[in-house]
Image 1 (cartoon, rainbow, N blue to C red):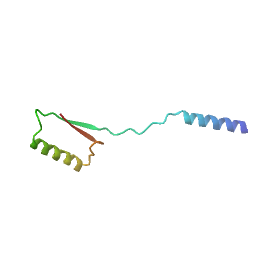
Image 2 (image 1 turned 180 degrees about the horizontal axis):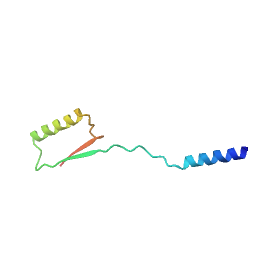
Image 3 (image 1 turned 90 degrees about the horizontal axis):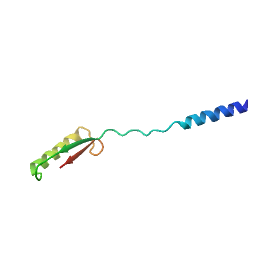
Image 4 (image 1 turned 90 degrees about the vertical axis):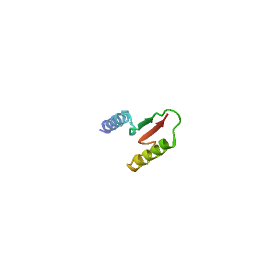
Length: 71
């Protein structure tokens, strides 16, 4: 009787350990790209700052929810 219980426990433990552990998937990071011709002027920089502030005000975190690339 003890041998059956031991074998059952051993098989259950091996079965439980055989399933691979999966990490929690990270949320999607959105990329926002801006293309400019020439050097960005003061107006463009002010608009970008306002755009970033609005996204942050809406609850987005730069680097976690979105990334802005300027080229």
